[in-house]
Image 1 (tube, rainbow, N blue to C red):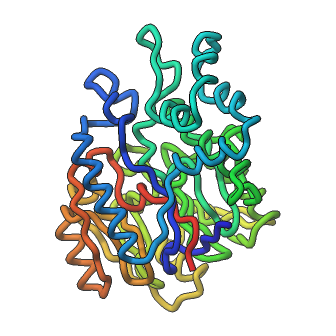
Image 2: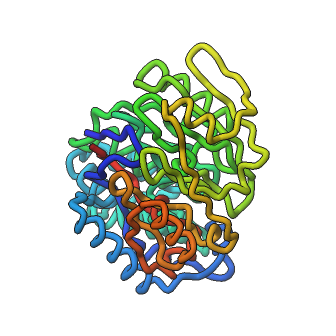
Amino acid sequence: MVNVKSEISTLKKVMLHIPNKELEILTKDNMNELLFDELLDVPQAKIEYNNFINILKDNDVEVVFIEDLMIETLKHNKDIKNDFINDIINESDEEVIAYLKGLSEEELVELSIKGLTKNERFIINPLPNLYFQRDPQMIIGNGICINHMSTSVRKNESILTKYIFKYHPDYKNTKIFYEPENGFNIEGGDILNLSSKVILIGISERTSIEGIKSLANHLFNESEIETIIAIEIPKKRASMHLDTIITQVDYDKFVIYTHDFENSQTHIITKDNEQLSNRPLKDTLIKYLNLNSITFISCEDEIEQWNDAVNTLALKPGKVIAYKINEKTNKLLRQNGIEVIELEAKQLGMGRGGIHCMSQPLIRE
């Protein structure tokens, strides 16, 4: 079962991935292709991530790991192994396929994440971005959007999701609103669950308006969602996803990098209509969330925005996890009544993603 109808209601269960051997394959020659700007100290990144997990567990959040779910999926469904192998390899190679078929479920899943090379080519792409669990899928209400990633090197992340939510005994009955085969780019970092009836989606370098409209058709017919607010954000590395420039931290409070919304065009999409709006984002949120007012806690520091100051994860209304390095923004959050738990994450942050990016909520109260 999944249930996420808010960005801020009490977090009960989350899906994660601890960064591991797939990051060791990064080199100065391939890191840009694999969407990294810098090389990470992998042992230190794992320590930082385990500290993140401990914070979650200390706040009574159940943690599950995507690799464990995939192993359980294969063990419960022996007949899907060959299909899974064919989906994750880049080219048909009888020798490689025979080798993969002989692996245990644990070994196969490890290789599907770590990657596999032959003759200096990736036969299976490594997934160093997998610890950013928000991107390949997004829980919306009681269903899931399995995303079409904007870059081919991340395609296999969504394949793991697809198998889990089609075949895992705990998740196979989840309603699937969108699948990678739909063809239009969508990534989870661009989607915020504002209420059971309203979601906010960024039109970004990684999520297209065509993908949003395709998802909308399914949501309006198969979920409680009545309104999608789709807002254009700058197509640049520093704002690759909506959650790098805005996240919700309380019922009526958002932390935001306002500079990237100054000239935004907003699409209001409902089942029977789509209209463009020049209304400021704050006024739009007040209207569709039925609030009297909203506070924007504004991150004004360009360096802190780059370091994912805005990319917070709410544990409950008014309580968030944030990167410790962003002192100015964390101080502003506290001045506005938000409890901030700080995570020391110098290595994790070098992957260009924050706390929100690293987590995929499965259940919120």
